[in-house]
Amino acid sequence: MKSKENDVQTEIETYFQQIAKALPREGRKTLLPDIRAGVESYLAENPEAGIDDVVSYVGTPEDIAAEYYSNLDGGEITKEIKVGRKIAVIVLICLLIAALIFAAVIATDMMISGNGYFVTETYVISTSDVTPTDLMYS
Image (cartoon, rainbow, N blue to C red; front, side, top):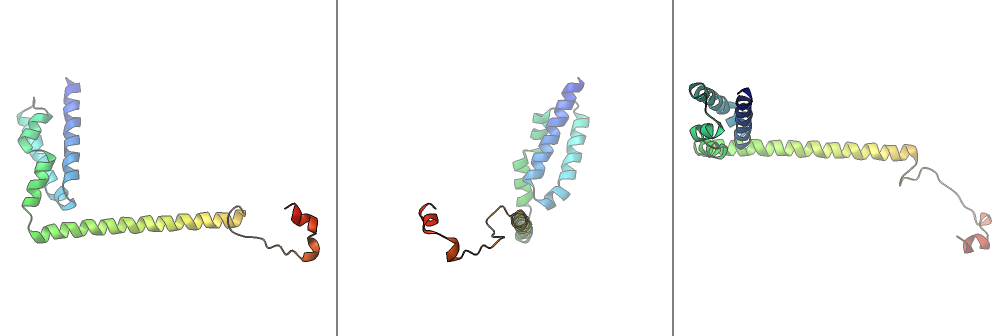
């Protein structure tokens, strides 16, 4: 019987993760604890309930997210979008910095090891060092 309880708990945790993915950051902080408390209360009153019963009681993650957004006014939605954009810009900047550091490390390694596209030595060839035979076979 414990295995069935563990399976239901695993499914419910997956369900909460799906809800968290569907909600914006602020919604996860404010709404998810309330949903979790409601589900725990529902399961305490209905110990034989499965994940389908919980979804019927609370709703799908998409339904929850839609309800959350429908209760926001325009300013709050704009704020959520701006936060998302700021996060995207920060991630892109971090990736750019990482790429620049990687390129600098590779360039430095190539310069130090001499194995690469960088010229580390200069050779001077005078005309007296080259014979016509050398030119024919090069």
